[in-house]
Length: 260
Image 1 (cartoon, rainbow, N blue to C red):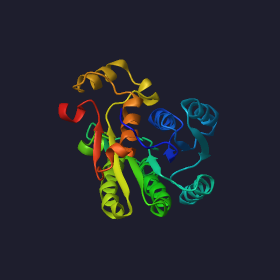
Image 2: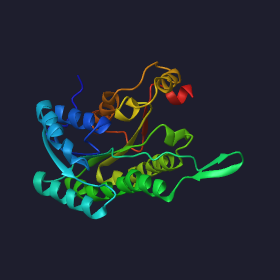
Image 3: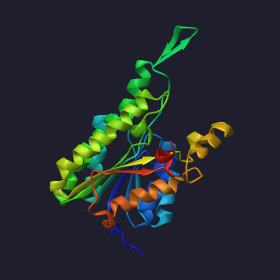
Image 4: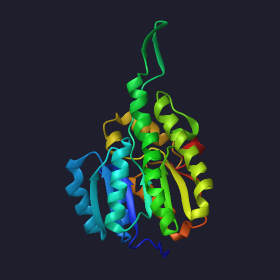
């Protein structure tokens, strides 16, 4: 059995109230971590904290909009004051606002991706990762090291129809990951990204079955991913078992990119 060396570590999981983020918070708690969940969904706080405690960790929930620089900086200071520092941050928070760049009907432009669609996704998925990492890194430097884990996506590697905004942010996350790995390695900070494929979350639950079947048909391993598949990847990358890995993008996609 691999020892993760994570017991007692202070971990922040953004977007930790649901889906992959919630499972990630629970998995770090199972390693004996102190887990701070940052999310705008305050209604989920009680249930999330209960799951963290039941898994064996200690938790706190802060209502944080990751696109709000002041809110992020304040939340980071609160975690440092409460737990003495930050060891790991998982930049999981993200949204989608899908639409074609330009949609035509009978040769006429009937719709374009709006500024609101663009700005909303960039604000959470890209600026949010920047804000949270910038806020967490000074504490990691003071502690002599840390781990930054960023949520990208397989679509950030090969693009996707109707997702100009989302793909741009997920490709941008990869660029930031590689840049920060170069900049922060000297301080003992490792920076990696995870690129999930089709993962069974609340978002996919509303999709037609034929669409889900199509997703599975393009996945060589023959199933949808589970939130635990991604959470386990985050825990491993944060652990001592991955101590020589930085600047990497780990695809957790059942072979989707290979099968595309």
